[in-house]
Length: 117
Image 1 (tube, rainbow, N blue to C red):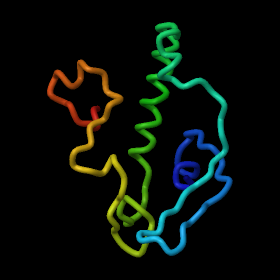
Image 2: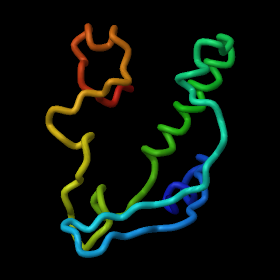
Image 3: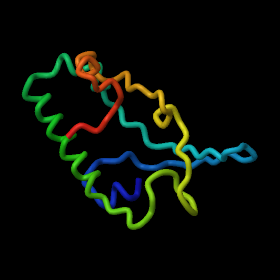
């Protein structure tokens, strides 16, 4: 989060606490961040004007461009540690399919979540 706040203009909720589990293999770390009360974009998208949707899309595009410019030195992406580590979670499995994509994307052959320029 510090990397994003120091190298971009992307708003990031403030970090309240870091919790680390003890005695479990692997050790898990959880972060607690400030809650930002706002409607879920999925819930309000159909009620937004065309112009408002364009503004949101341009903002997200700007955020992605900033993410791509972040310099992380020579450190590999992934969990923080002494060296490269395995990332755990459903998004890192071989059979992960993003259910957030609209059906038309899947019908074009891109049924897995990929980075689309």
